[in-house]
Image (tube, rainbow, N blue to C red; front, side):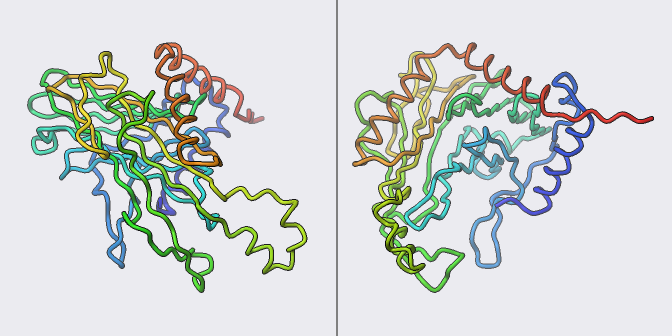
Length: 330
């Protein structure tokens, strides 16, 4: 979770922007810039990981908390989605994705800059070493639930690995919702799909969580509302949420799928472009959900990158030009 101070900073920043009547042309004057690496993940008093010093990014549905993991040599993303709701109606994070660069550029780091670009809702990270400058850019398309991650080295070739990891146990587990700690529920683990289903790029990573039951009817009974069970839609039963991570390279054979949780470049490269497509839907089976996710991936893969980025930038330009209040002094 983000710290309260970071949320207060974000709210104050938005208030300043709106109150200043800023157009898209000078919104960039208020970009958030970090010039030192934050140590993430941290730990709380219970020894659990925390992500207080991360940079938030989103498109209104998909969210990402972006941070650098120096020891791993990675740019990491903590992923979320507004409708990623489990059987207990609790919001679950989707997972953690690491983009690992080898050799580790942070061992020879000379300058660092991480920027939240307000004009087009993107994050860039410049990692300068004594040999090269690596630029990482991340943006979540305003018009689809797809994220694009690009890595570019100015001179030196690097090996790049993209890995996904679950934030939950790898076996069935017991979950106690924070809001009513007197009751615990059994949960299924996240699924890392193996092998890659037909239709997806061969070097894809796919992970999802499926709600195999729901507490809605039980809750309605407890509240004396059993009579409305048959006329109320249960939005949680068989709700499935997750994402697919895949290279945008042509040819995609530049990437190798090493296992169900990682893909790597076949050789050292100067540039890499990857996408993550996110999807949530109640479906009769898990395979039905995968079919629908595959269609979403195919649509984005078949689009023109320049056109997608132009439409994304146009959305945010329109946002900043309409979302302001003009205040004049006498």
